Length: 328
Image 1 (spheres, rainbow, N blue to C red):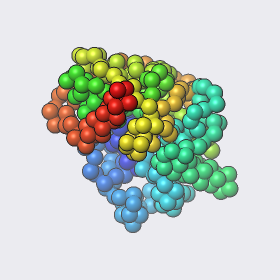
Image 2: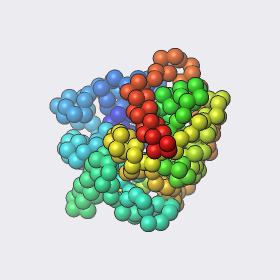
Image 3: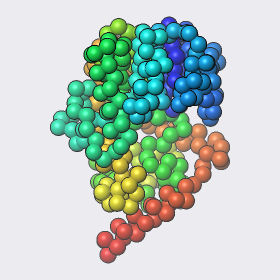
Image 4: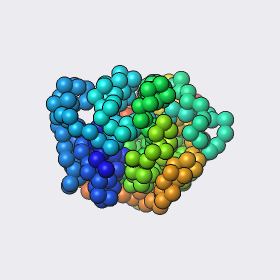
């Protein structure tokens, strides 16, 4: 197939790019050429800014693609621009949404694709919901060949699972307290980007994927206490955990809190039956215990990757001081 990816060198999309090329597809990446990740060998690159439609029209010309994958639309106006550029020029427009769009807490687990979408805490998720609604209406009214994919917490070797990233691991290495929201017992799903790619690539060009929504996630469910324990273990230490109510974190740092109250503070596990119906070879063999060792090793390989965020440390210390006063 001829695949165009808007983006294609990000945390999730880089693994998709690699797998598409390994399977012999013709891959074209449309981006600004500014990613820190290198372009995979064999991919064509069209340098253009999707926020500047004229540059995209010039770069793409009159070409058609079997699938166009949009990793970079976050609000309805972005989607509208993408449709104006590619509607009628592809057999499938794949929109990357987010599993954070599901209502939390959910009424039942595991989550299926028909669960209600609602997130009053996080604007990012509300915008994704609006984009989905716009696209599915376009499919119903105009027959636009749309597929919506909702990744959950998908990571590669560059990404720690907790807010603060290396800054939190640096505290672990120094024996300093690290914050786990709530009591740490809510369940969470982490997906290695190579596992995600196998499910995703199977949807491209699939006729039964049109007009449908799929989440693609790992099958391993971990508590946040276990996630922090495994992260510390990969770093060769034990974590000195302090449990902090999520709403207290949100009061001290609204940005951190939005992702907690709107997503991570709740148990989130998924039923992957739907994706496996269309992509029966989709499996997730990479456990987090293995993946987090890759993340720690990547950061340790270069001191520049071990930068400590002083602003985040200040937030941390402020929250810990609040907790100390509450205990005294």
